Image (cartoon, rainbow, N blue to C red):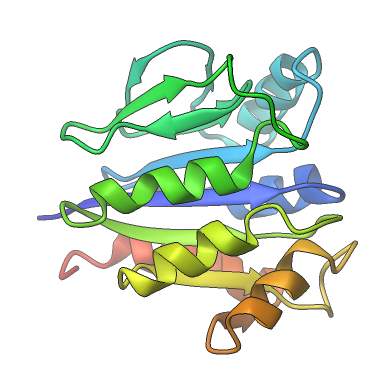
Length: 189
Protein backbone atom coordinates (compact mmCIF):
# COMPACT_ATOMS: atom_id res chain seq x y z
CA UNK A 1 0.00 0.00 0.00
CA UNK A 2 1.40 3.36 -1.06
CA UNK A 3 2.01 6.06 1.54
CA UNK A 4 -0.49 8.95 1.41
CA UNK A 5 0.47 12.59 1.91
CA UNK A 6 -2.00 15.48 2.15
CA UNK A 7 -0.52 18.96 1.84
CA UNK A 8 -2.65 21.96 2.80
CA UNK A 9 -1.75 25.60 2.20
CA UNK A 10 -3.81 28.54 3.44
CA UNK A 11 -3.70 32.17 4.49
CA UNK A 12 -6.52 34.56 5.44
CA UNK A 13 -9.56 32.56 6.58
CA UNK A 14 -7.53 29.35 6.64
CA UNK A 15 -7.68 28.28 10.30
CA UNK A 16 -11.46 27.70 10.29
CA UNK A 17 -11.31 25.94 6.92
CA UNK A 18 -8.44 23.72 8.06
CA UNK A 19 -10.38 22.73 11.19
CA UNK A 20 -13.35 21.79 9.01
CA UNK A 21 -11.10 19.48 6.96
CA UNK A 22 -9.49 17.95 10.06
CA UNK A 23 -12.75 17.43 11.99
CA UNK A 24 -13.08 13.67 12.58
CA UNK A 25 -10.49 12.97 9.85
CA UNK A 26 -9.36 9.36 9.72
CA UNK A 27 -5.73 9.29 8.61
CA UNK A 28 -5.63 5.54 7.81
CA UNK A 29 -1.83 5.66 7.89
CA UNK A 30 -1.62 8.89 5.88
CA UNK A 31 0.19 12.09 6.80
CA UNK A 32 -1.11 15.68 6.67
CA UNK A 33 1.25 18.68 6.53
CA UNK A 34 -0.20 22.19 6.84
CA UNK A 35 1.41 25.50 5.91
CA UNK A 36 -0.91 28.20 7.31
CA UNK A 37 0.37 31.78 7.03
CA UNK A 38 0.61 32.77 10.68
CA UNK A 39 3.08 34.39 13.02
CA UNK A 40 4.98 31.55 14.71
CA UNK A 41 3.93 32.77 18.19
CA UNK A 42 0.32 31.85 17.32
CA UNK A 43 1.07 28.41 15.84
CA UNK A 44 1.08 26.51 19.20
CA UNK A 45 -2.39 27.74 20.19
CA UNK A 46 -3.73 27.06 16.67
CA UNK A 47 -2.31 23.51 16.66
CA UNK A 48 -3.56 22.74 20.20
CA UNK A 49 -7.02 24.12 19.47
CA UNK A 50 -7.28 22.27 16.14
CA UNK A 51 -6.28 18.99 17.79
CA UNK A 52 -8.83 19.36 20.60
CA UNK A 53 -11.69 20.56 18.39
CA UNK A 54 -11.09 18.05 15.61
CA UNK A 55 -10.17 14.90 17.53
CA UNK A 56 -6.86 14.36 15.71
CA UNK A 57 -3.26 14.33 16.88
CA UNK A 58 -1.59 17.56 15.77
CA UNK A 59 2.15 18.12 16.09
CA UNK A 60 4.04 21.34 15.40
CA UNK A 61 6.94 21.02 12.97
CA UNK A 62 9.82 22.88 14.63
CA UNK A 63 12.86 20.81 13.66
CA UNK A 64 13.91 18.06 11.28
CA UNK A 65 11.20 15.42 11.70
CA UNK A 66 10.52 11.91 10.36
CA UNK A 67 6.86 12.23 9.40
CA UNK A 68 4.46 9.67 10.85
CA UNK A 69 0.72 9.13 10.46
CA UNK A 70 -0.48 12.36 12.05
CA UNK A 71 -1.26 15.99 11.31
CA UNK A 72 1.65 18.43 11.29
CA UNK A 73 1.51 22.22 11.32
CA UNK A 74 4.61 24.05 10.07
CA UNK A 75 5.91 26.62 12.55
CA UNK A 76 8.12 28.18 9.88
CA UNK A 77 9.24 27.42 6.33
CA UNK A 78 9.66 23.67 5.77
CA UNK A 79 10.72 21.47 2.88
CA UNK A 80 10.35 17.74 2.41
CA UNK A 81 13.52 15.74 1.86
CA UNK A 82 13.22 13.99 -1.54
CA UNK A 83 14.24 10.64 -0.07
CA UNK A 84 12.20 8.08 1.82
CA UNK A 85 11.11 7.89 4.59
CA UNK A 86 9.31 11.24 4.61
CA UNK A 87 11.39 13.84 6.43
CA UNK A 88 10.48 17.51 6.93
CA UNK A 89 13.41 19.91 7.18
CA UNK A 90 13.16 23.49 8.51
CA UNK A 91 14.32 26.30 6.25
CA UNK A 92 14.80 28.98 8.90
CA UNK A 93 17.60 30.69 6.98
CA UNK A 94 15.35 31.25 3.95
CA UNK A 95 13.43 34.54 4.05
CA UNK A 96 10.11 34.55 2.21
CA UNK A 97 7.26 37.04 1.97
CA UNK A 98 4.87 34.54 3.53
CA UNK A 99 5.71 32.15 6.33
CA UNK A 100 5.24 29.26 6.57
CA UNK A 101 5.65 29.35 2.80
CA UNK A 102 3.20 27.18 0.84
CA UNK A 103 5.15 27.22 -2.44
CA UNK A 104 8.24 25.96 -0.63
CA UNK A 105 6.31 23.07 0.95
CA UNK A 106 4.47 22.15 -2.27
CA UNK A 107 7.53 22.44 -4.57
CA UNK A 108 9.75 20.41 -2.25
CA UNK A 109 7.19 17.58 -2.37
CA UNK A 110 7.86 16.98 -6.06
CA UNK A 111 10.86 14.87 -5.09
CA UNK A 112 8.77 12.44 -3.04
CA UNK A 113 5.89 12.23 -5.55
CA UNK A 114 7.42 9.11 -7.15
CA UNK A 115 7.16 7.19 -3.85
CA UNK A 116 4.14 8.80 -2.21
CA UNK A 117 0.58 9.46 -3.35
CA UNK A 118 0.00 13.23 -2.89
CA UNK A 119 -3.12 15.34 -2.56
CA UNK A 120 -2.33 19.07 -2.40
CA UNK A 121 -5.02 21.56 -1.40
CA UNK A 122 -4.75 25.34 -1.72
CA UNK A 123 -7.31 27.10 0.44
CA UNK A 124 -8.48 30.66 0.95
CA UNK A 125 -5.93 33.46 1.21
CA UNK A 126 -4.53 36.76 0.01
CA UNK A 127 -1.81 36.79 -2.63
CA UNK A 128 -0.41 34.00 -4.77
CA UNK A 129 1.60 31.80 -2.39
CA UNK A 130 1.11 28.13 -3.26
CA UNK A 131 -0.18 28.67 -6.80
CA UNK A 132 3.07 27.89 -8.65
CA UNK A 133 3.92 25.01 -6.28
CA UNK A 134 0.47 23.52 -6.84
CA UNK A 135 0.97 23.74 -10.61
CA UNK A 136 4.41 22.06 -10.36
CA UNK A 137 2.89 19.23 -8.30
CA UNK A 138 0.02 18.91 -10.79
CA UNK A 139 2.57 18.31 -13.57
CA UNK A 140 3.92 15.30 -11.61
CA UNK A 141 0.46 13.71 -11.51
CA UNK A 142 -0.36 14.65 -7.91
CA UNK A 143 -4.02 15.31 -7.12
CA UNK A 144 -4.37 19.09 -6.81
CA UNK A 145 -7.33 21.12 -5.57
CA UNK A 146 -7.91 24.87 -5.40
CA UNK A 147 -10.75 26.13 -3.22
CA UNK A 148 -13.66 27.71 -5.08
CA UNK A 149 -14.51 31.40 -4.93
CA UNK A 150 -17.87 30.37 -3.44
CA UNK A 151 -16.39 29.08 -0.17
CA UNK A 152 -13.15 31.13 0.03
CA UNK A 153 -12.99 33.93 2.59
CA UNK A 154 -10.46 35.65 0.31
CA UNK A 155 -10.25 34.36 -3.26
CA UNK A 156 -6.59 35.21 -3.90
CA UNK A 157 -4.32 32.17 -3.65
CA UNK A 158 -6.80 29.67 -5.15
CA UNK A 159 -7.74 32.14 -7.91
CA UNK A 160 -4.08 32.50 -8.85
CA UNK A 161 -3.77 28.68 -8.93
CA UNK A 162 -6.75 28.51 -11.32
CA UNK A 163 -5.28 31.29 -13.49
CA UNK A 164 -1.95 29.43 -13.73
CA UNK A 165 -3.58 26.06 -14.36
CA UNK A 166 -7.16 26.15 -15.72
CA UNK A 167 -7.24 22.32 -15.44
CA UNK A 168 -6.80 22.33 -11.63
CA UNK A 169 -9.73 20.81 -9.76
CA UNK A 170 -11.80 23.57 -8.12
CA UNK A 171 -14.05 22.54 -5.23
CA UNK A 172 -15.97 24.25 -2.44
CA UNK A 173 -14.89 23.53 1.13
CA UNK A 174 -17.52 20.84 1.80
CA UNK A 175 -16.40 18.91 -1.28
CA UNK A 176 -12.72 19.36 -0.31
CA UNK A 177 -13.51 17.77 3.08
CA UNK A 178 -15.04 14.74 1.28
CA UNK A 179 -12.20 14.54 -1.26
CA UNK A 180 -9.49 14.51 1.44
CA UNK A 181 -11.20 11.70 3.35
CA UNK A 182 -11.84 9.69 0.18
CA UNK A 183 -8.17 10.08 -0.76
CA UNK A 184 -7.06 8.80 2.66
CA UNK A 185 -9.64 5.97 2.56
CA UNK A 186 -8.71 4.74 -0.94
CA UNK A 187 -6.34 1.81 -0.42
CA UNK A 188 -5.99 1.18 -4.17
CA UNK A 189 -3.83 4.29 -4.71
